[in-house]
Length: 266
Length: 255
Image (cartoon, rainbow over all chains, first blue to last red; front, side):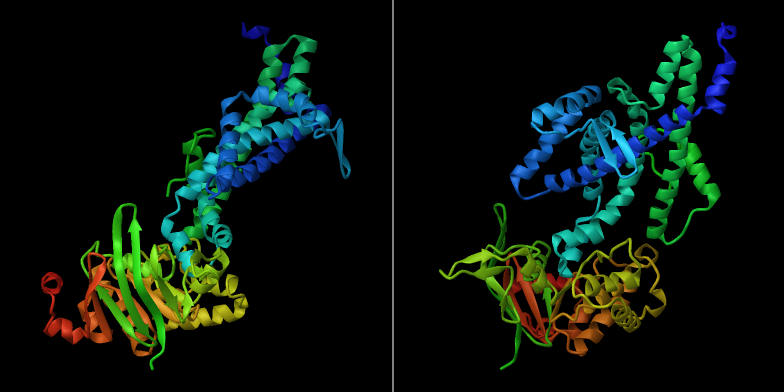
C-alpha cells in the first residue's frame, strides 16, 4: 500500500517548493494576519459597544455576534464575496485593489473581509472575558484619580486585559491560519489551492495533501513560538521578571500547538 | 469662620429597595481629620464613596470646596447629573485610598504614582517622576521605585497607594478601611504614615475601626449606624463617655 505513494513527490513538496508555492504561502500568511488584525479591532469595538450605556449599541453588538457565530464561515465567505456589492448597492469589493506596489485580487479582498468579520464575532467574547476578568477596583481607582472612562480603559484596563486575551487570541490565530484554506472555494490562490491544483493534475492525493498539511503544521508551529514569546513579555512586565529559555520551551512543549485557552504556567 | 472643605447635606442613597443612607449631614473643615466608625452595613463606606461620586446620591447634596459633586444645578432649580468630564475634574481634588489598595499591577510603584499627574494633569514625565520619588521617600519606600505591586507587601502597597493619591495634591483624601485587609503586624506602618499626614494638616475622612489611630490623629469621630450619624464628638468623648447605648455596645466589641 505504502509503495503506491510516490515519496519523491512528497519530498519535493516539502523540501523543494517552487516559486508558485511560495507566492501562495505568502498569500496565506498575509491574508491570515490582516484578517486577524481586523478581527481584533472589530472584537474590541464590539466588546466596548456591548458594555455601552446606549442600548442600540448593545443591540448591534449582540446582533453581530449572533449572526456571525451562528452561520457557517463558508456561507459567510460566499455571501460577502458574491453578495456584498449587490446588497450594499456600491462596490465594496473591487475586481482588483491596488495598494501601492501590490495589487490584491477581489477574491482576496472579499476573503479577508469575510474572515475578519467572522473573527471579530469570536474576538468580542474573548475581549469581553478579558475586560471582565479585571477587578472592578481598577476602574474605581482610575476614576478616583480623575481619569475619564476612555483614558482608564486605554491606560489601565485594556493593558491588563491584554494579558488575559493573548492566549485565546493565539488559538484564534492558529484557527485563522487553517481557515484561510476555505478561500480556495472563491478562487484565492493560497497553499491549499496550490495543492488542490497539483492533485487534480496528477491524481496523487496523498502526496499533495500530505505536503500541504506539512506546511500548515510549519505555520502553526512557528506561530506557537511567537505566541509564547508575546505571552512571556506580557507576563514578565507584570511580575517584573523573565522566564528562562528552558521554562519557555517547556511551556510551549507541554501545551502543544492547539489547546484552547492554554496559558503559560505561572 | 473655618473653611469648609466637604459639606454633606441630608444625603440619601438606596440600592434597590435597601436604603443605605437615610439622611447624612456632615461638615469637614480644612485640615481636619475625621474618623467614621460603625458596624458593617451602617453605610459608612457608601457615604465616603458618594463624596467622590463613585456612588450616586439619590437626594441631598455633597459639596467639596463649595463645588457640588456629581450634579449641576439647572436654571429651574432641579439637579441633573454632571458630565463625565467635569465629574472627572472634580475627582482630581478628592483622593481615595481603598481597602484593597487597587494599585495598577502592570505598573511599577513609581509609574503608579506618575500615571495620573502625567495623563490627567498633563505634568511632564520628569517633573512627575521627581515628585513621585519624593513621595515614595516620604512614605518610606525610596528603594521600591521600580518594583511592581505584586512584589510588595500589603503594607507597602497601601503606602504606595497613599503616595499615589498625594501626587494629585488633593484638597481632601478619603480612606476606605485602609488597614482592614492588612496583617496586624503591618497596619502600624500604614497608620503612622496617615498620622503624619493628619498632623501636617491634610484634610482626611477615614473609615476605620482603629481606635488607636482615632486617638492619635482624629479631630472628631463620627459614629454611624443604620444609615445615619448617631453620635459625633472628640476621640476622648468616645473613649470616656459615649452617650448612645448603640455606641457603647459597638465600642465594647472593638476596643
